Image 1 (tube, rainbow, N blue to C red):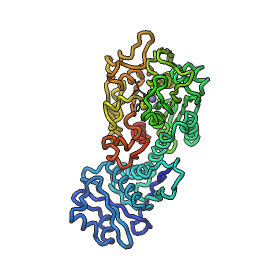
Image 2 (tube, rainbow, N blue to C red):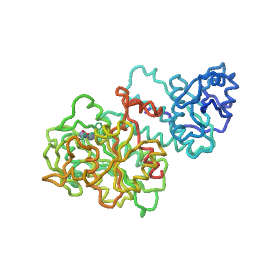
Image 3 (tube, helix red, strand yellow):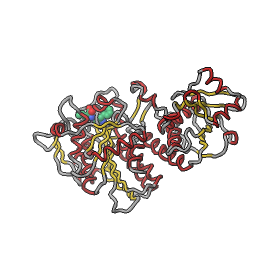
Image 4 (cartoon, rainbow, N blue to C red):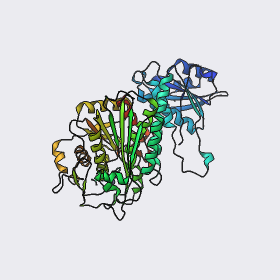
Length: 497
Ligand code: BES
Ligand code: ZN
Ligand code: ZN
């Protein structure tokens, strides 16, 4: 784990605290805040000169450092003043931190980019911490080259906003870590341990079912997928009761496939390593619970993580096998690589049977097809309840974590009917694979429970080699390599954390 833990608040002036660099914003046409003007004056007016010369314009993404004998000034572009929204604040804060790190400046004093704007301090803290994230756990050589940011201080009255942003960003960084750890470390057992730790901190009830219990309870989907690996599978349950028990809980379900080889329907070797990220759905859920443990919102939340590897051991399930899910429905397995939906089937059935959810959200790196449909830009969503989908879209706007709805029309739902079982685990070849997966999941959510499925296969991690269409460079607070921690902020906004 390597990232800044908190962003500190101060109401002192920039000259009263020690700092390696003072970060200020520049609006388009070179408009400066009073503080920016003041810092620049002390430095000798270099910033104003650069603006006059057109070297600095205040456009988004811009950043430059000015040096004087006593101080360093870091100017970041904020764009049009009237358009300054929370996402631009998050990005500018991220840009400032990234620039400071590149120049090995460890202690940053930042002005508040927007005063009297709801959520501005929170966004600024989020951007700073998320941008400071590095995953160095497995680098044992030349450690002295690893530069660590030490302190970020923002001048603001909104201490609690900074605190909230810091806690949320820490939860996202925790989820990134889970995603980035390889399959031999981030096992189902490890996910269960992390769930227990969060549970202890947040006074949650945590239960973990092992292989014997999973089989005994009739979770045939999870048991079927887990048959091919010796690594113990886990079914993880967390309950957070933050308000009256009579209030319906919001249920979060996450795919915890800690490595997906494809099973007998094996995947090609190239990039198979990336299937260590196939548990990023569970990282969204555990990340959200991590934040909930800190924020203690007055809501009820249940988290469910079915977790296993999908391997090719001697007892592995095979194409043609028929499994029975926890709700009694039979599933014809036609491709063992469509395993995520099988383990989610049990989790969604469990949520439907044992809770009266206000709604169920599930998160999964479920289909390669979602990348064909939406690229690496947006998470594909599907659901059964327009009000819930509307809420999801609204939280997506607030948090700048993009989602795009795909239709779950009945024509698609026919595609997963099996000739010999109730359903089959793939749809029609080469057609709407992401929707077919959604249609399959729908079979395991009890009628009447609002439900929304998030297919995060395109947004859960980044890889600079394929340079995901410029999406990565757009967001300076998201790492260009590895797990993104995307969608956690959206979930926290949605559940009013
Ligand atoms: N974990 C994969 C989906 C995936 C693929 C995520 C690429 C991220 C990048 C999932 O288990 C899977 O293999 N799905 C199959 C479904 C198909 C067999 C119907 C897929 O997308 O090819
Ligand atoms: Zn698969
Ligand atoms: Zn998978």
